[in-house]
Length: 55
Image 1: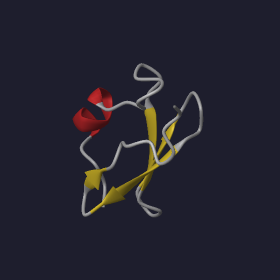
Image 2: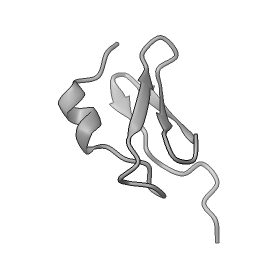
Image 3: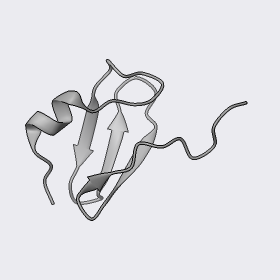
């Protein structure tokens, strides 16, 4: 499922909010352009939560 390009313009990685995200619709993944962290897209909703938050 393709995400709206306007949505991709405002979404960002929690650690690098201005870096932008690449969308792989087939894999249902968003990837941060700065740190290469992957975020799943579940049911058309990007899940931008850190899996292993640093303390």
